[in-house]
Length: 499
Ligand code: XMP
Image (cartoon, rainbow, N blue to C red):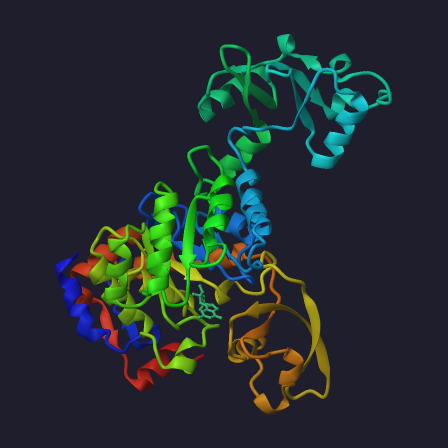
């Protein structure tokens, strides 16, 4: 741990994001461009990310569509466990959708036998929307390829696949596990769009397609596993079906399991981790939430690979209101970072309402940030868009505004802010549908531009901080935090963050 970091402990007592500004430094980067500024970070012991963003495991935030975008953009999505107890399959399906989304090598391409009828093969193509089927015999030896073009304009009511396929002898085939660039060169040279891979016995190892290579190259920051598939995490609880759920998720090749409970420094968590570790000693495990040094040490001793930090800062969290327990998030991050030392990654979870706060979370202790409400209402969140009437201030009429539900967000303030509605009296709050911890938030477009904006702002922060990369700024800050920190008075807080 950097020596200057100790000075922070006193400074952050009772403090959170809006209590500080950072003093601008001599800027050394020419372009504040996320494609050239290094934003890489650790998510957990064995998973690194090129961008430090993680979408929250909330049932109104992260399912496959959100997790896919996050991973494509260099972050990670954690699929929530908000499926009924014992109802494991829907969560597994979400994980599978992400893992199948993108491949360098498709390990289990849709396949038919040479003797399969053309009628059936066409039905498989329609059902799976696969334009190419690999033809294999019972021992999975490659016999040919059947493409949509092979069955176009022919009578598919009769005949077998073997009558229309391109036989293996006429195909360009890759031998063994080819590296992507070798495969690409071969495909360009031979002018083919599909490259089946076989072993020395002619057994099918997989399929490489030009489309997947293209996609791969357009997403240079994507978070991928060793096989080139997008990474995804999934949350489980600490009781009930949690081990059974973990087993199914692991079978679906989930990259990391997050044991997520409100109070992670607890006897329930101790039991859950012990049981988990016994059954899945090699699976990457994150646990949380905690907000104290004791809490981090407790999880570290049990061998978790990262810790989720945050008790009560989240937009949807009512813990502090109902129990009066919690730790202001910057204080929590500093104390947890000190306890974690340099080696255990921390995920700063909750309470981030403006882009600048992401940088603060990453400097004060987080390796990554977990975001919920910042992604709410986007196309990739689960749930339907509903049109609700909203009464406009200063006008005697209401307009229909599209909304999506965000569960776990207690405050109506967020909606008001987004709608830019100033006068509480004339807003029909009932019509906004806010009830308890479930609120409606204005539906927005895709989350992708939001992620891009966040990353651009993060690069600007790095420029103001006088560093060349996120890692360098973090190091500079932790070596000498007083060089950066300005603790704000009430009026300077208003000047800085009230708009
Ligand atoms: P933001 O502020 O990004 O926070 O929306 C996301 C995090 O908030 C937590 N969360 C909750 N915690 N009850 C809780 O105790 C809830 O209903 C709730 N909803 C969200 C969670 O840690 C999430 O990642």
